[in-house]
Image (cartoon, rainbow, N blue to C red; front, side):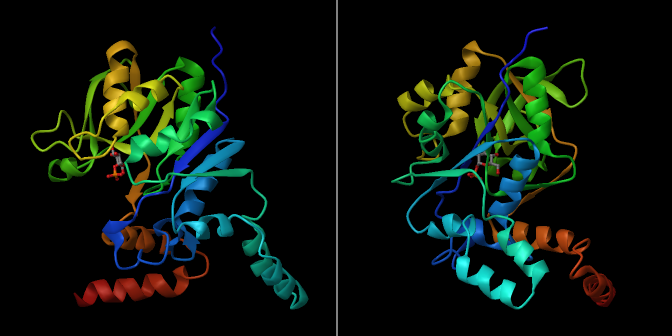
Amino acid sequence: MTHFPKVTKAVIPAAGLGTRFLPATKAVAKEILPIIDVPAIQFIVEEALTAGIKDILIITGKGKQEIEDHFDANFSLEKNLKSKGKDKLLELATKTSDLNIHYTRQQYPKGLGDAVLHAQTFVGEDPFLLLLGDDITRGENLSQSLINLYAEYGKTTIAGVRVNEDKAKRYGMLDIETTNQDHIFNIKGLIEKPQGEAPSNLAAAGRYILKPEIFPILESLKPGSTGEIELTDALIDYNQNHEILAYEYPGEWYEVGEAYGMLIASIIFALDHPEVKDEFIPYIKKLAESL
Ligand code: G1P
Protein backbone atom coordinates (compact mmCIF):
# COMPACT_ATOMS: atom_id res chain seq x y z
CA MET A 1 0.00 0.00 0.00
CA THR A 2 1.26 3.47 -0.86
CA HIS A 3 1.91 5.72 2.10
CA PHE A 4 1.09 9.35 1.61
CA PRO A 5 2.73 12.02 3.78
CA LYS A 6 0.76 12.75 6.94
CA VAL A 7 -1.07 16.06 6.98
CA THR A 8 0.32 17.97 9.97
CA LYS A 9 -0.03 21.59 8.84
CA ALA A 10 -3.14 23.74 8.72
CA VAL A 11 -3.77 27.14 7.19
CA ILE A 12 -6.57 29.43 8.36
CA PRO A 13 -7.24 32.54 6.28
CA ALA A 14 -8.56 35.29 8.57
CA ALA A 15 -7.88 38.45 6.61
CA GLY A 16 -11.40 39.08 5.28
CA LEU A 17 -12.90 42.50 5.98
CA GLY A 18 -16.09 41.02 7.40
CA THR A 19 -18.35 43.39 5.45
CA ARG A 20 -21.25 40.90 5.71
CA PHE A 21 -21.18 41.52 9.46
CA LEU A 22 -21.06 45.32 9.60
CA PRO A 23 -21.28 47.32 11.80
CA ALA A 24 -20.00 44.69 14.29
CA THR A 25 -16.78 44.27 12.28
CA LYS A 26 -15.92 47.95 12.04
CA ALA A 27 -13.58 47.73 15.04
CA VAL A 28 -13.61 44.00 15.88
CA ALA A 29 -12.16 41.16 13.80
CA LYS A 30 -15.09 39.01 12.65
CA GLU A 31 -13.18 35.88 13.69
CA ILE A 32 -13.26 37.07 17.32
CA LEU A 33 -17.06 37.43 17.40
CA PRO A 34 -18.22 34.67 19.73
CA ILE A 35 -20.67 31.84 19.43
CA ILE A 36 -22.02 32.42 22.95
CA ASP A 37 -18.63 32.78 24.70
CA VAL A 38 -16.08 31.20 22.39
CA PRO A 39 -14.63 33.19 19.45
CA ALA A 40 -15.47 31.59 16.10
CA ILE A 41 -11.79 31.13 15.26
CA GLN A 42 -11.23 29.11 18.45
CA PHE A 43 -13.68 26.49 17.17
CA ILE A 44 -11.67 26.30 13.94
CA VAL A 45 -8.31 26.00 15.74
CA GLU A 46 -9.69 23.35 18.11
CA GLU A 47 -11.07 21.31 15.20
CA ALA A 48 -7.60 21.31 13.59
CA LEU A 49 -5.77 20.44 16.83
CA THR A 50 -8.20 17.62 17.65
CA ALA A 51 -7.53 16.23 14.17
CA GLY A 52 -3.82 15.95 15.03
CA ILE A 53 -2.54 19.11 13.31
CA LYS A 54 0.80 20.24 14.78
CA ASP A 55 1.41 23.60 13.10
CA ILE A 56 -1.13 26.26 12.25
CA LEU A 57 -0.66 29.35 10.10
CA ILE A 58 -3.27 32.08 10.45
CA ILE A 59 -3.29 34.59 7.62
CA THR A 60 -4.36 37.88 9.14
CA GLY A 61 -4.47 41.45 7.88
CA LYS A 62 -4.80 45.01 9.11
CA GLY A 63 -6.89 45.34 12.28
CA LYS A 64 -6.71 41.66 13.20
CA GLN A 65 -4.30 41.89 16.16
CA GLU A 66 -7.01 40.57 18.46
CA ILE A 67 -6.58 37.14 16.91
CA GLU A 68 -2.92 37.01 17.96
CA ASP A 69 -3.80 38.34 21.40
CA HIS A 70 -6.46 35.68 21.82
CA PHE A 71 -3.99 32.86 21.14
CA ASP A 72 -1.43 34.30 23.54
CA ALA A 73 -1.05 34.37 27.32
CA ASN A 74 -2.74 37.23 29.18
CA PHE A 75 -0.38 37.51 32.12
CA SER A 76 -2.23 40.08 34.26
CA LEU A 77 -5.57 38.29 33.80
CA GLU A 78 -3.98 34.96 34.75
CA LYS A 79 -2.37 36.53 37.85
CA ASN A 80 -5.66 38.06 38.89
CA LEU A 81 -7.67 34.85 38.47
CA LYS A 82 -4.97 32.83 40.27
CA SER A 83 -4.89 35.18 43.26
CA LYS A 84 -8.69 34.94 43.58
CA GLY A 85 -8.64 31.14 43.29
CA LYS A 86 -10.88 31.21 40.19
CA ASP A 87 -9.49 27.97 38.79
CA LYS A 88 -12.25 27.26 36.29
CA LEU A 89 -11.98 30.68 34.69
CA LEU A 90 -8.20 30.39 34.73
CA GLU A 91 -8.48 27.14 32.82
CA LEU A 92 -10.67 28.81 30.18
CA ALA A 93 -8.33 31.79 29.89
CA THR A 94 -5.20 29.65 29.48
CA LYS A 95 -6.67 27.00 27.16
CA THR A 96 -5.51 28.97 24.12
CA SER A 97 -2.29 30.41 25.59
CA ASP A 98 0.34 27.97 24.45
CA LEU A 99 -0.35 26.78 20.91
CA ASN A 100 2.01 26.49 18.00
CA ILE A 101 0.46 29.18 15.82
CA HIS A 102 2.29 31.14 13.15
CA TYR A 103 1.03 34.35 11.57
CA THR A 104 1.46 36.16 8.32
CA ARG A 105 -0.42 39.07 6.79
CA GLN A 106 -2.29 39.50 3.56
CA GLN A 107 -1.61 43.12 2.61
CA TYR A 108 -4.51 43.76 0.21
CA PRO A 109 -8.00 42.18 0.16
CA LYS A 110 -7.42 40.35 -3.11
CA GLY A 111 -9.44 37.24 -2.30
CA LEU A 112 -9.18 33.79 -0.78
CA GLY A 113 -6.80 32.51 -3.49
CA ASP A 114 -4.37 35.35 -2.78
CA ALA A 115 -4.62 34.71 0.98
CA VAL A 116 -3.78 31.02 0.49
CA LEU A 117 -0.77 32.02 -1.62
CA HIS A 118 0.66 33.66 1.51
CA ALA A 119 0.98 30.15 3.01
CA GLN A 120 3.48 28.96 0.41
CA THR A 121 6.69 29.13 2.46
CA PHE A 122 4.97 27.73 5.57
CA VAL A 123 3.62 24.78 3.59
CA GLY A 124 6.81 23.95 1.66
CA GLU A 125 6.49 20.53 0.02
CA ASP A 126 3.73 19.18 2.29
CA PRO A 127 0.02 18.63 1.79
CA PHE A 128 -2.00 20.88 4.09
CA LEU A 129 -5.42 21.35 5.60
CA LEU A 130 -7.20 24.60 4.78
CA LEU A 131 -9.96 25.75 7.14
CA LEU A 132 -12.11 28.77 6.38
CA GLY A 133 -13.07 30.76 9.45
CA ASP A 134 -16.71 31.39 8.50
CA ASP A 135 -17.56 27.69 8.50
CA ILE A 136 -18.18 25.98 11.83
CA THR A 137 -18.88 22.27 12.06
CA ARG A 138 -20.60 20.24 14.76
CA GLY A 139 -20.54 16.47 15.09
CA GLU A 140 -17.92 14.39 13.29
CA ASN A 141 -14.54 16.19 13.11
CA LEU A 142 -14.51 17.17 9.44
CA SER A 143 -10.78 17.93 9.37
CA GLN A 144 -10.05 14.48 10.76
CA SER A 145 -12.20 12.86 8.06
CA LEU A 146 -10.36 14.75 5.31
CA ILE A 147 -6.97 13.87 6.80
CA ASN A 148 -7.99 10.19 6.93
CA LEU A 149 -9.11 10.30 3.30
CA TYR A 150 -5.80 11.84 2.28
CA ALA A 151 -3.93 9.05 4.09
CA GLU A 152 -5.89 6.56 1.98
CA TYR A 153 -6.02 8.24 -1.46
CA GLY A 154 -3.35 10.99 -1.41
CA LYS A 155 -5.60 13.32 -3.41
CA THR A 156 -6.69 16.92 -3.09
CA THR A 157 -10.05 16.77 -1.33
CA ILE A 158 -12.86 19.27 -0.85
CA ALA A 159 -15.49 18.96 1.86
CA GLY A 160 -19.05 19.52 0.71
CA VAL A 161 -22.47 20.03 2.22
CA ARG A 162 -25.89 19.97 0.56
CA VAL A 163 -27.54 23.38 0.21
CA ASN A 164 -30.91 24.52 -1.12
CA GLU A 165 -30.98 25.56 -4.76
CA ASP A 166 -31.60 29.22 -3.93
CA LYS A 167 -28.41 29.34 -1.80
CA ALA A 168 -26.08 27.97 -4.51
CA LYS A 169 -25.09 31.42 -5.74
CA ARG A 170 -23.36 32.07 -2.39
CA TYR A 171 -20.92 29.16 -2.56
CA GLY A 172 -18.39 27.25 -4.61
CA MET A 173 -20.58 24.53 -6.18
CA LEU A 174 -19.24 21.09 -7.06
CA ASP A 175 -19.90 19.02 -10.17
CA ILE A 176 -19.63 15.46 -8.90
CA GLU A 177 -19.89 11.81 -9.91
CA THR A 178 -20.48 8.98 -7.48
CA THR A 179 -17.81 6.47 -6.49
CA ASN A 180 -18.34 3.06 -4.95
CA GLN A 181 -18.09 4.67 -1.48
CA ASP A 182 -20.77 6.54 0.41
CA HIS A 183 -20.02 10.25 0.94
CA ILE A 184 -17.08 10.21 -1.51
CA PHE A 185 -17.34 11.65 -5.03
CA ASN A 186 -15.03 12.43 -7.93
CA ILE A 187 -15.07 16.07 -8.87
CA LYS A 188 -15.67 16.70 -12.57
CA GLY A 189 -15.72 20.46 -12.22
CA LEU A 190 -16.55 23.32 -9.88
CA ILE A 191 -17.78 26.86 -10.11
CA GLU A 192 -17.58 29.78 -7.70
CA LYS A 193 -20.92 31.45 -6.87
CA PRO A 194 -22.80 30.37 -10.02
CA GLN A 195 -25.20 32.98 -11.37
CA GLY A 196 -27.10 30.38 -13.39
CA GLU A 197 -27.91 26.77 -12.58
CA ALA A 198 -25.48 24.98 -10.24
CA PRO A 199 -24.02 21.62 -11.35
CA SER A 200 -25.28 19.92 -8.15
CA ASN A 201 -26.48 20.94 -4.71
CA LEU A 202 -23.14 20.08 -3.07
CA ALA A 203 -21.40 23.28 -1.90
CA ALA A 204 -17.76 23.64 -0.83
CA ALA A 205 -17.97 23.76 2.97
CA GLY A 206 -14.75 25.58 3.88
CA ARG A 207 -12.43 22.61 4.50
CA TYR A 208 -9.89 21.37 1.96
CA ILE A 209 -6.79 19.21 1.76
CA LEU A 210 -4.53 20.90 -0.76
CA LYS A 211 -1.12 20.10 -2.19
CA PRO A 212 1.69 22.58 -2.91
CA GLU A 213 1.06 22.18 -6.67
CA ILE A 214 -1.80 24.64 -6.15
CA PHE A 215 0.63 27.55 -5.54
CA PRO A 216 2.02 28.09 -9.07
CA ILE A 217 -1.57 28.00 -10.33
CA LEU A 218 -2.64 30.60 -7.78
CA GLU A 219 0.35 32.73 -8.71
CA SER A 220 -0.65 32.85 -12.36
CA LEU A 221 -4.37 33.59 -11.75
CA LYS A 222 -6.09 36.83 -12.62
CA PRO A 223 -9.14 37.98 -10.61
CA GLY A 224 -12.23 35.94 -11.53
CA SER A 225 -15.92 36.80 -12.00
CA THR A 226 -16.11 38.02 -8.40
CA GLY A 227 -13.23 40.49 -8.94
CA GLU A 228 -11.03 38.48 -6.54
CA ILE A 229 -8.41 35.78 -6.91
CA GLU A 230 -10.53 32.73 -6.20
CA LEU A 231 -9.28 29.45 -4.79
CA THR A 232 -12.08 27.75 -6.73
CA ASP A 233 -10.61 29.03 -10.03
CA ALA A 234 -7.21 27.56 -9.11
CA LEU A 235 -8.90 24.23 -8.30
CA ILE A 236 -10.69 24.25 -11.67
CA ASP A 237 -7.30 24.63 -13.34
CA TYR A 238 -5.71 21.96 -11.09
CA ASN A 239 -8.57 19.59 -11.89
CA GLN A 240 -7.62 19.61 -15.61
CA ASN A 241 -4.63 17.38 -14.83
CA HIS A 242 -5.31 15.99 -11.34
CA GLU A 243 -8.14 14.12 -9.69
CA ILE A 244 -9.97 15.87 -6.87
CA LEU A 245 -12.26 14.14 -4.39
CA ALA A 246 -15.30 15.55 -2.65
CA TYR A 247 -16.32 14.36 0.79
CA GLU A 248 -19.94 14.95 1.76
CA TYR A 249 -19.91 15.95 5.42
CA PRO A 250 -22.60 14.11 7.38
CA GLY A 251 -22.40 16.45 10.39
CA GLU A 252 -23.86 19.90 10.98
CA TRP A 253 -22.40 22.97 9.27
CA TYR A 254 -22.97 26.60 10.18
CA GLU A 255 -21.85 29.68 8.31
CA VAL A 256 -21.01 32.28 10.93
CA GLY A 257 -19.58 35.02 8.68
CA GLU A 258 -22.92 36.83 8.69
CA ALA A 259 -25.49 37.66 11.35
CA TYR A 260 -28.19 35.07 10.50
CA GLY A 261 -25.78 32.11 10.46
CA MET A 262 -24.20 33.28 13.70
CA LEU A 263 -27.62 33.56 15.32
CA ILE A 264 -28.58 30.02 14.29
CA ALA A 265 -25.22 28.61 15.45
CA SER A 266 -25.59 30.41 18.78
CA ILE A 267 -29.05 28.92 19.36
CA ILE A 268 -27.91 25.40 18.44
CA PHE A 269 -24.77 25.58 20.58
CA ALA A 270 -26.77 27.03 23.48
CA LEU A 271 -28.92 23.87 23.56
CA ASP A 272 -26.02 21.87 25.02
CA HIS A 273 -23.88 24.62 26.52
CA PRO A 274 -23.32 23.66 30.18
CA GLU A 275 -23.51 27.23 31.50
CA VAL A 276 -26.66 28.38 29.70
CA LYS A 277 -28.72 25.37 28.56
CA ASP A 278 -30.79 24.91 31.76
CA GLU A 279 -32.10 28.45 31.54
CA PHE A 280 -32.14 28.73 27.77
CA ILE A 281 -34.10 25.61 26.80
CA PRO A 282 -37.27 26.42 28.78
CA TYR A 283 -36.97 30.03 27.63
CA ILE A 284 -36.78 29.19 23.92
CA LYS A 285 -39.60 26.63 24.25
CA LYS A 286 -41.86 29.24 25.84
CA LEU A 287 -40.89 31.77 23.22
CA ALA A 288 -41.64 29.31 20.39
CA GLU A 289 -45.08 28.57 21.87
CA SER A 290 -45.91 32.25 21.98
CA LEU A 291 -45.12 32.87 18.29
C1 G1P B 1 -15.72 30.74 0.29
C2 G1P B 1 -15.35 29.90 -0.93
C3 G1P B 1 -16.57 29.13 -1.43
C4 G1P B 1 -17.13 28.27 -0.29
C5 G1P B 1 -17.44 29.16 0.92
C6 G1P B 1 -17.87 28.32 2.11
O1 G1P B 1 -16.61 31.75 -0.11
O2 G1P B 1 -14.86 30.78 -1.95
O3 G1P B 1 -16.20 28.32 -2.51
O4 G1P B 1 -18.29 27.60 -0.72
O5 G1P B 1 -16.29 29.93 1.31
O6 G1P B 1 -18.32 29.13 3.16
P1 G1P B 1 -16.83 33.08 0.80
O7 G1P B 1 -17.63 32.66 1.99
O8 G1P B 1 -15.47 33.57 1.17
O9 G1P B 1 -17.58 34.03 -0.08
